[in-house]
Image 1 (cartoon, helix red, strand yellow):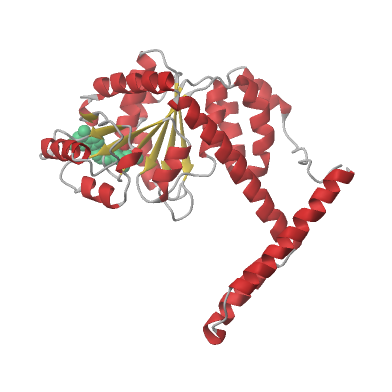
Image 2 (cartoon, rainbow, N blue to C red; image 1 turned 60 degrees about the vertical axis):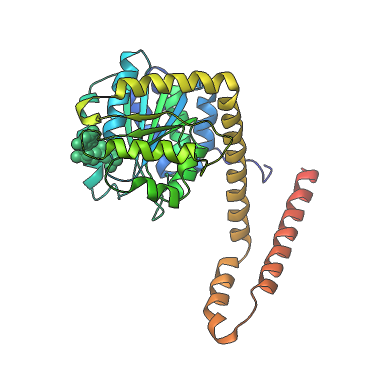
Length: 337
Ligand SMILES: Nc1nc2c(ncn2[C@@H]2O[C@H](COP(=O)(O)OP(=O)(O)O)[C@@H](O)[C@H]2O)c(=O)[nH]1
Ligand SMILES: [Mg+2]
């Protein structure tokens, strides 16, 4: 057995059978497996790959409380009414164990419960960063293989989440609400570039027009990327089901436009590259940790740093030369295999 070969994960073949026969329970169990045991991801993805048919992945992002879950639920209803089976991945900033926001989202999404054309899954976000769960793209692939054409990925719009949501979606809807300085925050964080569609939700509250005007002003005045056409800037009152039909139309337009221009294909290629690179980095790092006491050395160095004022670079060079030795050994293994 060559070292490069992944050990086959013990797995229940019946689960796949049930999945391919459309069991939602089997779908949920595979997702749980992916979340609980990242080592099972290669096996699961390989089994499901032939079933994937290129679902459209739509990110719904924005600050907490602007109405992302409400928009997501309402948009999903419009999508299913138009015949698109829709999966929802809600990435919650709070721990799933505390229940709070998780239950809140479920309540907002309850008008979808029992709808066989919708599948809702909450994932825990990556610790501390507010970013997407590392399982998100894999869960989206599972939903794709299960037959969902649209996959809505709701993420809280802070920090790392913007970059994450960009790498794992085809289209991003940026949701804001009036009266909270969202635009200023978004500009400060440099995240205005992320949205393909801007949605001013809660337009039943005062200040919505002002926010829409500010967005137009920002895009027209060229503070942002000059080469970019002004994205659609829409309004909604999701809790009153107002404006989501227009949002739905714009999403379908953007899908057509991005498909025709090759942008969706390009994003998918980037996604594959990104997947391969991160998986490889992970593997290299894990193997390096397994072969050395590098973690301990780094901690020890940091502990002594205050007293010794040592440069870290000799240590980095030393560790790097060990990576080189390990990779050399690996390539000798490979050529002798
Ligand atoms: N006034 C008003 N409230 C809304 C609207 N959409 C959502 N909400 C409320 O805003 C709160 C936060 O909504 P939620 O969808 O959980 O926001 P999220 O944190 O961005 O997912 C809830 O109490 C919603 O009922 C809207 O269009 N108008
Ligand atoms: Mg939410």
